[in-house]
Structures are given as C-alpha cells and as structure tokens.
Length: 259
Picture 1 (cartoon, helix red, strand yellow):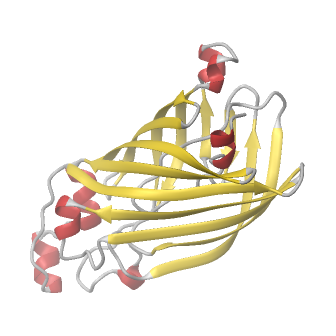
Picture 2: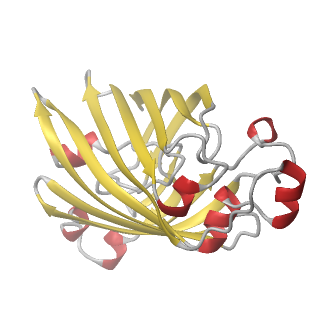
C-alpha cells in the first residue's frame, strides 16, 4: 500500500461526477463498516443542499471485486489481467454507480423532474509516480432516457501532514448532449409551462473540480476519512437557466471499523 493510495481509499460520490480510486486488492478479503455524514447539491446547478447521516460499508476481495458505499459495486480486473505486482500500479475495471437527479421539491414549476439513475462506468487509473496518480472514467446510462454519457479525467497528488497525507485531485468532466439536456436543458413544452427560456445544450465540457481528501488511522481497526470537493460548472451547463450556482460543493466525513 502506498501512502497516496491509503489516503484515497474512500472517495465519496459527487454531484458532477465521480472518479474511482482505490487501493490495490488486499491479500485477504477485507470488510469495514461505519457511519458517514454527507452534504451535496440537491440538484445539478442548484443552490439547495441535501445532508444526511448514512451507513458506510466496504467489502474488498483479493480478486478485485468490491461492494462499497464509497466505490459502488464493481470489479478491478487488474489482478486477473496482470501480476499482483502490476495490480499495485494499475486499476482497470467497471462498476455500477448511482447518479442523483432533480427531485420535485427543487424542480421549477413546469420543468420535468429528473429521476436518479444507476450508471455503468469503465475506469482506468495508473500510479505514474510515487506521488502522482492519473485517473480516467467513462460512464453511460444517465439522463431521462438512459442515453447520457460522461468522460472524466483527473490527476491526484498528496501533501504530507505528519504520518498522514492530504490528497489533492484536479479533474474535469465532459458529457454528451443527452446528459446535458436532461440535467440542464429546457424543452419547448417546459419553456411554455415554466416561463423559462428554451435551452438546448450541446455536448462538451461540463465542469472542472478540485478535491481534498484524506484518512487518519487511530489503530489497526478504527479510522476516519473525509473529502471536500468543489466542482465549477462551465460551458452550456454554467449558462443554463436552471443553474443557480456554478460552484457545486460536496463533502463527507466517515468513521470506519475494520472487521
């Protein structure tokens, strides 16, 4: 385990997207559970926020399979494709991941609500150096008709603080027209019903973000992890009549016990 990977082993979801980053598969099956307090934008581009205290769970298998409230349900195929040593550097696989929409309570009158979706993401990460992780992900299945797609790229490095490390991630998200129109678009019928101008976003860059995340281990069983993320909407997403704030912030703090 590298210090950088340890600090990033629990990376929570964010409204604008979520790159996956995990440690190499463990030598033996690992089970952890705990509680998380989370806060995130209630809707794409919105000012309203949602907050909750939720259970946290993570199961990691030596073959790369994982079930986690932070990572989703998926499989890191690196141990099967290459040697165990290579799997410490590369992460390649797929996962199922929820994407939240726009609930009725924060949807302008006359605009169609956007339900939550389960998306599929293919990911590929490489630890280029001891202090630099390069990340990428391509997801599909979002939007009202499940035909939305997103592509994310990112780079993560770390700042040592005593025995711990604060990881800094810079990332960007691009999306196709189907995703952007579902999250930020206003059709002709919606415009007539709501009084808002029509808005038909084209595919392109959706946001750029910076995130700080870290983990502190109290002992072999107990630890605490957290993340703060600020995504800045750009392009047609930023100019949408539905966008109330271009800055989309989320954070989480989780307390873990390893069994």
